Image (cartoon, rainbow over all chains, first blue to last red; front, side):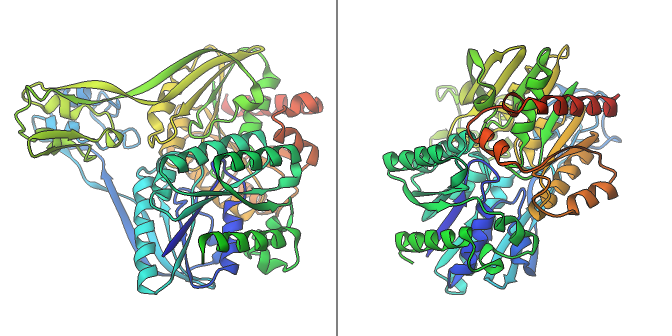
Length: 288
Length: 278
């Protein structure tokens, strides 16, 4: 089974739109949205949710006021300064480390598990999809990403699907690390701006660090041809295959507004044609 | 005053707004780039850096001469970052949240703390702007402790502009929670709107007033504006799509310098925020 993760470093380079277009082109695949923090793929794929599960992870301390004697041990030991002078825990500051729970001499602190979000198994017009929603201001996005990827693998195996297409999160931190570990390859969607290039280099470095083969495509390439060439030269030097260029094309936005992929919206758009070519190169590379 | 610039969706123009706003105001301004996973503001501000500091987080170090393998450290750790295996204790530094629980619980005082590198903080300046950013070490998962250290540079005597990371989870909350105002930069597309709602939700949980900047305001539909109307969210600025702006940005140049007529608009944006906060 092959698992391709689409990442970018910088947000807003077109990951999700390109990923959705791939969904139009690939056969026998399962879709997975690992951008659990600000998931957008479902806005195009319009999933019909078949199964919904709570995502439980981490705990938050709650001080039982009846039992509290106000000794202050918890306040002294909390490194997050999450406990106020009147012994209330600020749930946003609470890291869930349980140190206060353990050391409270009155055993006055409860430590319930958090429900941080939910995850779904759905049907879409492109095939099955596994996706999730992390609650606003919640933690443990990396764990939810890991869970979503595990469930995607299980489902793909059960359905005999050989390919998982995964939309990844931006950045290089916890959720990205959870998204790319053990994947067959990552496709880095970048754009020719100083920030696009800077962030692409960091995420390429991350892929190398975790030994996941990386490929690149340059979206909106015509906004700055010099930087497009710089990005491609960087790829060449680092042994990262450049799969192609996609021009700036308002079709992306128009298709998104209709809830369609670029290819569904217009079979002849400049961007759509470029993505088809990139998909062909990608399929060759991944041997699918 | 602290203004945190956030968005939910990535690539909507947070850094563009943060840097151009800072440069328009000119003096007595701090710009803190808290998008430590992918910091970009320096690519536009081009600060002269005069300070680089490695930032570490405390993790346990075990003195096996004192350890009796009682296992209490593994018991208290909620993050599975320390375990007793056979005749030794294994700390997993990358899982450690630095709570100090294992050190406090160890009856033999066999645990001390050492630093694990999270990344660097650089401090510099450009014109009157004090510039600080954090850069997460590539391969490091935990950004919030580094973000906290960047925010520790907040100078109450100055206007502090915080460039926040995308999303709505812990790194974003960290970058928002001390702000007096959250400026949400969005785009009028379905992705922009969906993620904007999440970001507004985050600002509401933190009980911080917020307003919008709509970027590429003529590429898309009217749903963001309709939502802003419904929710009583002030639209403080609109930036239409303009190839010159996109190209200026791509080269790492500042809009207010290449197209000086924008300086007035950013100053007006600040006046509106000030009015809303006071």
